[in-house]
Image 1 (tube, one colour):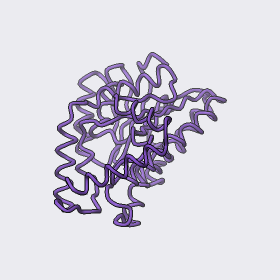
Image 2 (image 1 turned 135 degrees about the vertical axis):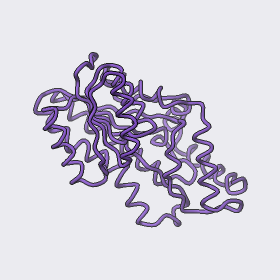
Image 3 (image 1 turned 90 degrees about the vertical axis):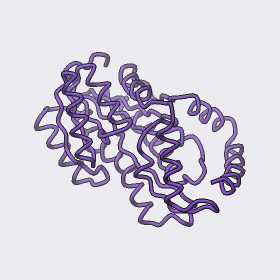
Image 4 (image 1 turned 30 degrees about the vertical axis):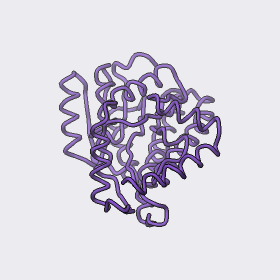
Length: 278
């Protein structure tokens, strides 16, 4: 699929960050956009911006972790557009802390958005694509899918699950003309840290201070989400399975392939360092 003029593109988590950039990338190419997010105000802003580019845009406030809301969103999209050509399962949140400090409530929250959100997006849109014999789904994974990161057991394990899920679904989709891709961005300048839940404290910082440090780090990064957004488009154009975005993602992939043990040992010493510094 290399011509997106008039194609119907669904993007979850489209109100900010990578999702908003993905919407802009497809809008510039003439796609018809169906956007959802829990942030209604942010959706309104990106809708106005994409319409200024000449795109036709519809938005809905949707919590992707709720199956009934995603089903209703799917039904509304099909009433407006009859079919869907591309789905980008982008919505995501983050939760940080030592394993013993993370409550089951926080586990349920991040699993609901980061994993079930992807499953819901595929569950409700994939069958229609299979029936038509065409379409493409892009699931946003992460460099975190390739190995452990300090205090991010929840995030890393779920991004790894998204990558594995995408591999299995791609094999099935190949039999019926539906493409499945996983895009793995590295560190980007986004606002995800503002909604991140911190469940642990360190010697120098309480949860609020840790949140501020991470937020300043993320927003201060020079890496723009626009590069990852273009990788999403390229994944659809070329029917690529996995696209690693950024040198840190490619390095993480290489180290994970090279030695699982090296990853775990490196994480142990990194945790010791962070406990003293943060």
